[in-house]
Image (cartoon, rainbow, N blue to C red; front, side, top):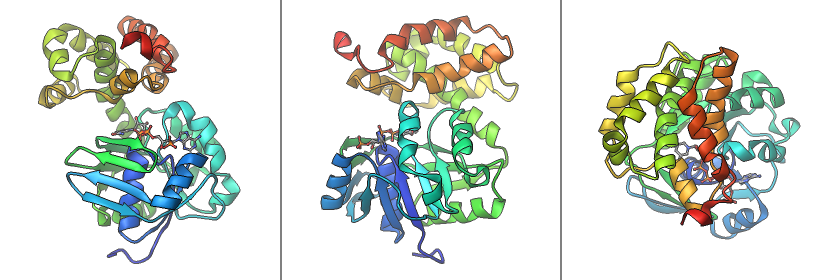
Length: 305
Ligand SMILES: NC(=O)c1ccc[n+]([C@@H]2O[C@H](COP(=O)([O-])OP(=O)(O)OC[C@H]3O[C@@H](n4cnc5c(N)ncnc54)[C@H](OP(=O)(O)O)[C@@H]3O)[C@@H](O)[C@H]2O)c1
């Protein structure tokens, strides 16, 4: 470990993101506790957290696991999906957290406010992660992307705390950097993600098909969403999709295919709420959200397969 001290880290939601980042921090020498339901807790206690990664190799770390946080930490990563965030945070009582930073890596833009209502606002440091990583079984993670990048920004936390956090992530092999503007960081991710997620899930197609067979609809949707925020760069978004490997799928689409709940509310729902606040019409987004709503809780997956 090249950082000065061992951090006490909790990971709420040891899935594709939390399992990978938590395992990398444990491998770097930090004291990591994974917080989840009883089955995953038992598995991690007995077998550790297993990672298979082209970038980091195959390794297993020993780690603590519990159904609830019982002692203060320096850092609590929040890596559950948005649809279960409300129930999951019960596992991290504010009194148990101490002065630990709360770092959500969820997609979406509304969860930081939810966390700042529950925890002291100056502790909440939103992050945006770029990675492709899957929880294939409890305590077992497959990391496919040749990168793990995390951006951190907080409107409420002193910058030196963000720098210290970025340093331990970098030390663990993650490309972490701090940014000045929290809202711009969160919007930037949502703006790129939403058209890709909504359209690939709706049409059940890869990005290669999306950008050729559905190009006009993709451009219309990017343009419609861009109207919500003047910082949106339409051309950059389209270039971003054009640079993806053609076979790439969105995680919402993979969730739909597997019959898992979708983060439809965190992505499409959040856009419609902003639009409503500013009375901006979003007919295409609204149509896609309506069409995908029957799949949102995962129940309709069987009828699609
Ligand atoms: N995966 C990626 O490549 C990726 C990339 C960028 C952004 N993201 C974003 O990162 C966030 C997390 O996604 P993910 O793919 O890591 O999700 P995931 O693989 O489904 O993992 C979610 C984890 O939450 C746990 N969980 C469920 N209910 C819980 C509860 N009540 N208390 C505590 N833990 C609970 C699950 O535990 P069990 O293991 O026990 O089921 C699972 O380990 C999402 O917002 C996603 O959009 C993901």
